[in-house]
Image (cartoon, helix red, strand yellow):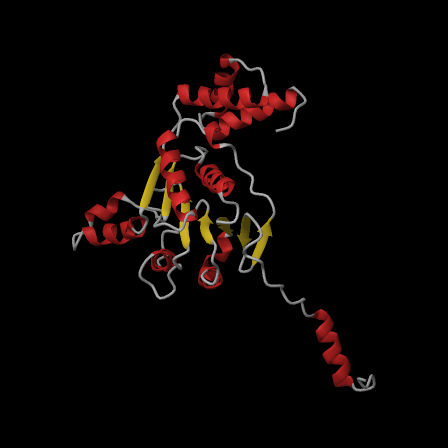
Length: 274
């Protein structure tokens, strides 16, 4: 029994009470998705729109779902960079593709979304995932680096290919970004009088590490209306083309996100949930 009269013993017990509980090891075989914040949290349900409701991105959808299916089957698969216009379904497509692969083989693959502040702990994540039989798609959403950040892009290049802490064979990385090259670029790069291609090539080297680089572009009016039509048919909602176009004009954009916001408005008026 601890001597309660001993000041050192009382201090030690107080420190034990203040210490956070040990983090239980995560079961990497049980959940369809996980969030990584330096440690893993399982997500019991992966939510994504059905693939057939993702309209206006048919070529992108085919490339992503085919690659995710290969990864889930244990075949050779690419790391993916999905870049381009905001609100055009980049992250939704990744979730939907993983959910589709899980529908064919529930335990084959899981999605792991990395929080932005946890990028420097990716090596620890890869060490854990590399011990598993399951395949994983590690997802970094809306990635961007500050203009003067050279360490971040170089670390990502190393994780993708060639570094001693590169991602293991059962893991592929998927990144979404508004920029094709991920890092900022300027016209002044072309004006460097000494080796003018060096700065450009160094920046492009990061995007070149991805086997698939898939662009998403602004929505045409026809695609925007087709997205709304698909969602409204799926949820039995009445809508008008004129109101849908007015909705996009008020927001100054046409995209899958704006279309979904309009559908949400319609569902709310009709007293329905989505």
